[in-house]
Image (cartoon, rainbow over all chains, first blue to last red; front, side, top):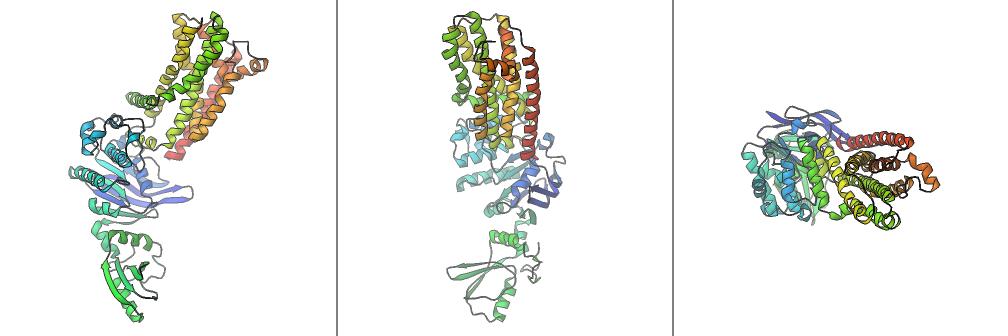
Length: 308
Length: 245
């Protein structure tokens, strides 16, 4: 069953195209990570899905209805990227206020306990630390016993311990059958939580697959070596020089090394390593632009086409 | 409706936690009572009653212009406001809650003026007139609520504070609130009927004393309500369009 859906959804703010014909389906029981750099369109997509914004074209659906109808939002919980509760209200009051909108809310003490906020119930939210306020914002998404939670960068600004508390709470919700759509630019977070990753860059869906597959699709390898000057090499998506070493991110390490040798380039200390998801993700984002500008259409290391 | 009350309750809580905010809208009319009404009209029952009613009008005006003008503008800056729109309800309960909370605060801000009027001056009203005055307060809140909403939805919060401050004093003076009925300087008597403050004050005067309202002031009050409602409605829709469409 599909709980949230975007179909060819585009969103324009003035001259800026924030989302470009995005297709996304979140099915019951999934834990989907929405991954992309700042400004990629993650928050815009979240806003469309929760009804804060209307798509300029295409459509979005929540539980089969328009997210802008209050009834469609009955079974969701939301944490937006920015959610500062009124600073003079106490933590417990903020929870009670949100609870009042749901027929069967989680009791206040239980909710606060689950998110490590039990000691703070009497504190005014203005006196909370950034991390505490963030945890409260995430906790509020779970007040109404939602079937789907949409969390926009839930752990931004949290320290490691607080982040793990949140991760545990999100995992526990998912283990109980809850569905999660969570955006992040922390790859570690998506790797730790999500089963499925949707990579967004420049308003478009660049990849939508399992965490492993997203790595495989790009098959990005890091080739590093010491050399003065390099010829034009195939499949290079990013070049960095750190402490005299050149680091090349490539979709096809074999082809690159072959070209390096064929060109008789002098080099020493060659190393080929797999990359982190972060590098893979940067590769898809940047590979998106020169996709068909002269790069040889070689197969990637995983044997699949490089264009996503 | 239930939810509107919930929203009203938490909005009141929010404001009451900063007592200065409540105190602010009550201060100026209360101070005017002590400095102008008590020494100059305090001993004359009729004059003191009119003057107290004028100050109540003043208080209603400033409370509404400030709390809606500044409150709405500040609210629009806060991320909490869009968050509440993701809850399973439309914008109506929050809006209704705001109006209810606004009315409650307006009555609260009247307490000092009424207490000073009752204890330090010879002003007097019958219980029936007092009840009528309470209802009149709700009626004359309408134009100033709309004015505040228009300011709040049109302007960013820093500009809203300035505009509210620029507006409220000329409206009070120009409407003849700081003089006895028919006793204001000539040019004010001329312009007063065309300002919403005058129509509002005349309704208050008629509620607490034997005063015949001037038709022109009533017509203009109606015109103001229509104009301000149109302006506030337009500003609200413009804001919705910018932030939620």
